[in-house]
Amino acid sequence: MKVILLKENFKKGLAVVEKIIGKNLNLPILNNILINLEKSFLNLNTTDLEIAIKYWFLVKTEKEGNITVPAKFLYNFISSLSDEKLTLETKDQTLYIYHGKNTSQIKGQAVEEFPIIPKIKSKDFIEIKSPLFSKGLSQVVDFCALTQVRPEISGVYFNFQKDRVQLAATDSFKLAEKTLLFEKPLTQSQEYSFILPQKAAREIINIFSEKEGKMKIYFSSNQVMFEYPMQETPHPQIQLISRLIEGEYPNYQEIIPKKYESRIVLKKEEFLNQIKTASLFNKKTNEIQINVVPKEKKIEISSQSPELGENQSGLPAKIEGKETKVAFNSRFLVDGLLNIKSEEVILELNGEEGPAVLRPIGDQSYTFVVMPIKNN
Image 1: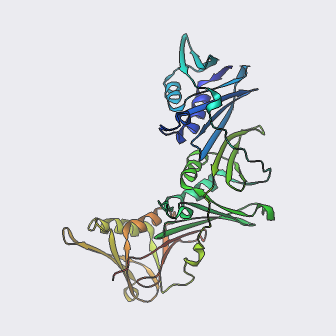
Image 2: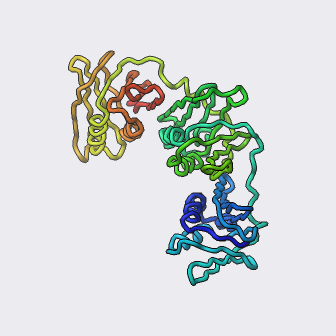
Image 3: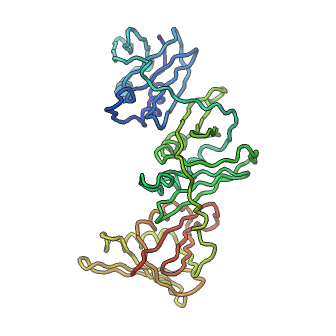
């Protein structure tokens, strides 16, 4: 293999693919990057056996070939160089990098040892705007359960319907759902659902959120591929392939209340700040209490602990429904509010033990459900 390339293009590609690399003592080859030179493209590949990332960019090819070398070491080394142009050449399982008047050598491993990255044979795909999809995914990804007992809720649920995709995540204490609409309705064969591991969802956000234009999503029975095209060519620039979580996602729609006992409209930032203040007084359990007072058109937020004392504050609100008093984990409310972008929020309560709902004003596409703390 021999190729001439721009350092910045190489560094940009390495930055995308090296993120999934960890320290793997059982399979050291997983710490490596597979570099393939084919025609006018350099292709970078990494995998942790659950997620694989591929990245292509244009280069000046002198001789096709491939090699696998330590990924993080290569990224750190390339990042340290000041030269604009580099020449890469392989000889006897070693990668030679010529930069300026200097030459560096990085020892590689046999390409045959690198795991085969599965291919999705389906030609059917769904197109969606990359920034829109990534932003929507970011509003639910943090609410997956950290559990091996119930793997089906350890990932993000995707439900592709004719004119929309619903993204949902829950850990049984809180639930977030985001609905994204398609510009073009799907065919019946494109309607599909799956559970994506949380790690893969986070990588999609990291990689695709800054990309303009549309991305493609390809499905198969046990894996999914997210693809972003190379500008001004039909060739892909980035592919992220992930295994899917087996199992059936719970019917979370049953958890979302269809009615409420009290409906409160609040200024988001003021509500958020008062919750954060109240939480300082009870770090052990994070319990705060919300008292809805319709007659006075306000809510009261209080917290206390024997060690620190107590705090009580009031907040004006538009209230429908009856007076009620509900206890919450303050962290859960903060998590929901931070994912709402509107200036005002709707809080719907269903008594002391029923699920509560947070929604942005003027946006029906996002729903956050949180369970109260039951006081026995």
